[in-house]
Length: 167
Ligand code: SME
Image 1 (cartoon, rainbow, N blue to C red):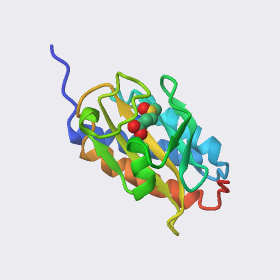
Image 2 (image 1 turned 45 degrees about the vertical axis):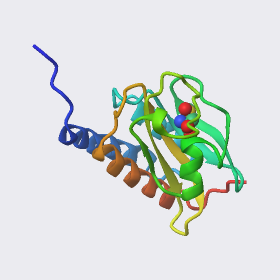
Image 3 (image 1 turned 90 degrees about the vertical axis):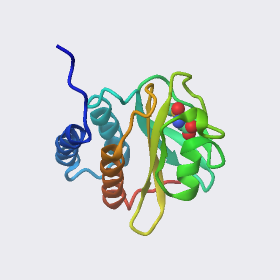
Image 4 (image 1 turned 180 degrees about the vertical axis):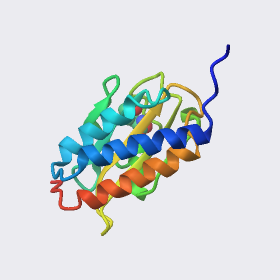
């Protein structure tokens, strides 16, 4: 018997469960590092297409510094001017990259990465706290469900941790 393919609907159902778990785990939590570590762990172990899952923190107006993550080791510092993470930080918008080879200036922290999604974590008053970076070794691994649910998660993190001191 062949394994069933994961459809957008299956993935959405998985996200509903994961985000509910994350909500419960973060309830009442005010420590931003603890929250990022928990989110990275929960997401990474819930989806087969997530091969690197973690946060880069905005520590100045032009620098991202690696935060809690799961997967192989990631680059430590990424300027806003570089790569997919830098583009997300600079533009404060989600970057959806089905093929990293087609993205000019992609930073190859891991040569196995083929596609990725990077979502900024913004406070309600538009301050950038971090970016959530999810990389896959599979080409075009992410779909509309990933975009919707990761955006929703990052919006909620931005609201919950708006008091976080970054620098
Ligand atoms: N994907 C990122 C680099 C970070 S790592 O791959 C962990 C980018 O091009 O911005």
